[in-house]
Image (cartoon, rainbow, N blue to C red; front, side, top):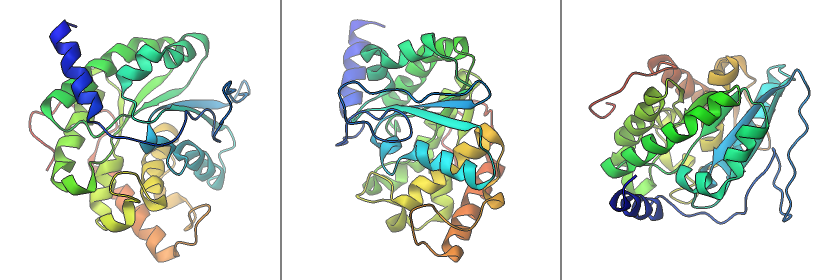
Length: 263
């Protein structure tokens, strides 16, 4: 990258979004200065989540594992490196994620940063996805782009966010998990945002549903009508599952590059 491009990326990164929590390792938060990784069995299906507060809010990795258990899948295990206000570039330079990819074997690696809706942000996401892709493949894993959502004050950006993550996935022949698109199909944004940026439990549930289907083939409508740790009604859980199913049906697992925003 040129020096000017690096300056642009730094400006873009600063605008992605903010968070408040320390790094998360494994499916539970680790507040110590020396976090430990979970122990995976030889037959486990291990997933590494790489992201920021959109991943660690409501413990998305833990939600994915919990839903897998509800479906009878006892082999799925997850670990996560998710730091506040981090983009993929930050993870690259911090070094923890590249080290984990070089030192351990994974089946899937789920990448996420901010909404990345603006043209420069889209290029930023694609560039760093391409930087990570060889390391992900070298670890034995498939790369998954977790398509997120814009700030609630910028709902008009949903199509550009989707295009950004679709194109990043297409650039590396990766999988696309359309969480943000599932949000639009559910439609009740006040119920999906907790503070105008981070997800509520409903929002995290939608993200977990699409990730679980992409990495393990478990359909949302194969799950019980309850969300672990909540008292959300069965009727509302069914609506969430239907939104996730609709999104998965119209978004291919391995998307092709798009030149115009997703309708």
